[in-house]
Length: 526
Image 1 (cartoon, rainbow, N blue to C red):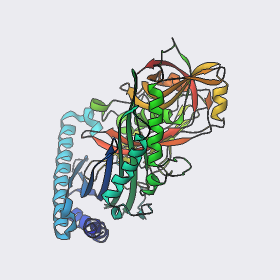
Image 2 (image 1 turned 180 degrees about the vertical axis):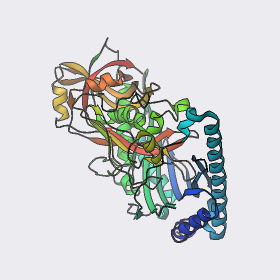
Image 3 (image 1 turned 90 degrees about the vertical axis):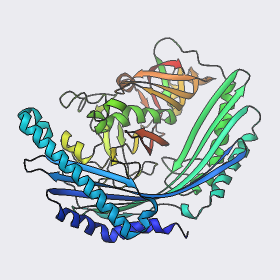
Image 4 (image 1 turned 90 degrees about the horizontal axis):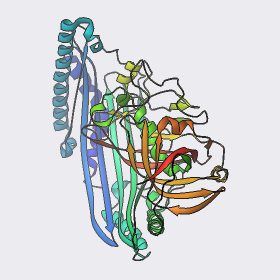
């Protein structure tokens, strides 16, 4: 691992020296009431294969930092300033690292002073009309000192790119053996080690390490005029063993990469031979499997429960939330679903979205969004918690070290019931069983949705019948949740590897899911 240690050693250097750097900065600048520093190093390797042929692998290692400074103006308002940058090999040279961190802190300080001064000028000019600029003070949180280690059998830095290419190529060969009906297949494997440290002037210092491994498969099947494109991913916060051997976790098990790809290609071949769904008229009973419901929980619960979205901080480019029209008109404490239905986010669970502390140094905790049909809470940062009058719940996270933290879901899911999924289907006289998610189309505030499925089975007299392709579910969100009349005992989490949010775009890994649900909705073609 020679050649890979220098940047990671910067974490240890900042563990020793980071608090002093921040303290000296805060003492030297008038008006500083708070400052923090985030620093991370990421090592990543990947390999791929296409149609039974290897493709070039990739390897990267980089370091980045971000700093945040709060400055109080004499007139009262507090200004916030942030900056961040990728710094690469510079992080391996302590003297240059310190110079860059000081430069960043000075830049963030100037931005914070400018913000505080402009707020004060507006308050002086507009009086009570500008009272919103006097933001409620950021709520305090406990001082934390902690170290969180990564979970892996083999350090991702000890693997070679050839190993990543081989696991992809072996899976590709197995898919190719399924025959000419598989017109195209692309397979990729990735493993990553990420270490980060957070330090602030309030006495918190948290270091966290993560190992990620992910496999992706995309297949195209063609039989006569029938055409099917399918894709899926598996991912764990573990080493490459979860792709080579599979993983038997309780909530988020996965097969090996080869088995995932063969299963997906076999399904695509079957779907290419199946008829296109001819949607029935009007609403009908639909039973959704955990893979399909994962995208519902992601799009219709997770995103609108992010408080920055709900408070319209990203309305211009990502939409709002059906849970909160305004601080006075919202769904808090109101019924939004069947009393059978509950949903939450929990970063402590073993999933792709697991973490202990967010990027503001706040301990992540379970947040209940819907409790027995009643909407009960948002994911928040320290700032949005102040606006909402709530306690911070550790949900502010950035996808890369130089980005500003946004409010992100973690492991977000519907809670299970007690009914076996077989019984839920057996109780349906006529309806459809919808399995696997593909493409979401969601309204601006998430108040209704259209999500396509990989497979749709007709249910007749409690039994699964004919298989269809190219089907999707269309529903009003509240109506769909309110009509849930059966919940399975088969909770599963599904890795979501590419959730985009923000501008500039930040792509984050998380997991979503739930059990089998039964409700009513309309069906349509893709």
